[in-house]
Amino acid sequence: MVFFLALRNIVKNKKNNAIVILLITVIVFIFFMGNSMIERSNLSLHDAFIKSLTGDVMIQKKADVSMNLFGANTPVIDEFFIIPVFPAYDTVMEIVRAESGIAGITSQVSGKAYLDLLGVRSPALLCGVDASTYFSVFPGVILEEGRMLYESEYGAMITSDRARRIQGETGIYPRIGDPLLFTSGSDFGFKIREVPLVGIFSYQNPGLFMNEIIIIDPQTARVLNSIQVAAPQETSYSNTQHEAAQLLSLDIDDIFSMESSFFQRDDEEDFSVDFLIGWLAESPSAGDINLAGGDWNFIIIDLEDNVSPASFIRSINKKIEPYGVTAVDWRTSVGTSAILLLLVQVLFNAGMLLICATGVITVINILLISVFRRTREIGTLRAIGSSDLYISSLVLQENIILSVFSGAAGIGIGFLFIKWINALAFSIPNELIASFLGGQILTLDFIPKVAAVSFFLAVILGIVVSIYPINVTLRIEPVEAVRQG
Image (cartoon, rainbow, N blue to C red):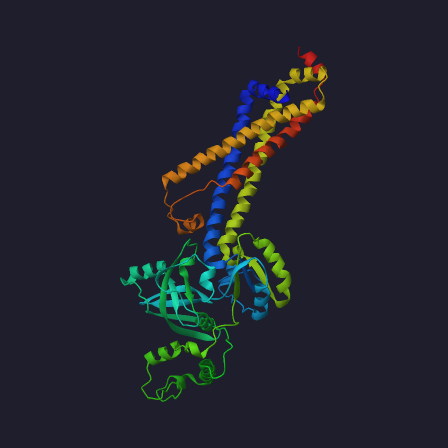
């Protein structure tokens, strides 16, 4: 009975109610579209990084600043930040392997260097990987040419995007076997290493900065980033460290004099710049160094689909905390881009609160006008014995019906808008925006979770805007109906 009376009142006051429906519909539409785009970006970044680079969980050494796979998450200090070496690697790895719900585990040494390939010099992000486990953990790494990096070999893989850029500058597409010359600098001096190109790959969902990544053997990544490596006796690295110490003890004139014995070789060939570059670039053979074991920056974990990353992180952190390491989620592992997207989401919804507050005030004023116009009707109901609960439920049901209709209308219009945008196949010229939205063509998805939250928002608005008008309605006395005839 109350429901049908509420419907009659809505039709009777259709002009005021039309304004209420319009306001709530607009609010729901803006909320739905904004969060749909943000959630689409979240899903794109999640798919891009989880299956290609970060895994679900990353374990790193505790630091004073938040840290991602390639440096600090604070841009001001990132240029000067050195990623710390993982402490108690073997012990922590045993703890991790004992956990349930893990689909795969791998380790990584990260760094930065300059790559010289076919005369083109460009910055590179280095992923020194455990090749025995890395590619099984990350199925999003797609081989284009050559082969995947083998365990216990020296070599590197570049992205097809980098290969095309080099071809654009030189007219030559990189070939498997081409030498890659890496240079880096640190407090320990400059490092130069040369390794062969073993493969060209692409990412299934390339995200921001991912085309700058080079997958490389961990030993070369360690050397370029001046990570001290524990090696067997008689390793050529012991000789290298001895030679480096000897080099520091010489005068600059002695180092570069033709009579210097520091760079003399057994065959007594003349010293030259080419020989110096070759000496600096010389890498020990794979058989001389044990590539397995410690000296890693990160342990990366891929979880099974039914395992909650947040719950896993809370559980594992209790066990590994004594070892000076901590587990973080994929968003922290990615760094600034994913964190900024989360900030955008927070700011957008904070702005929506202001819009909702403004809309609520406007709707309340419209409903109050409607209540005042119905003074005689409400007074009559009270005069014939209608309870406060009956009158309150009548007003509340009217407003909830309006809000439900408005919520459905806002979501429906949003759904049609998404279909229209997708049909336009709009091209995104900005690479940053394209990486957030998952491609160069603007594509939006209808996300049921966002639709449900939007509809819930409309219902909440309907309840909130009813509180004050109900209080005003209950203060109307039967005598008011008599006064108005």
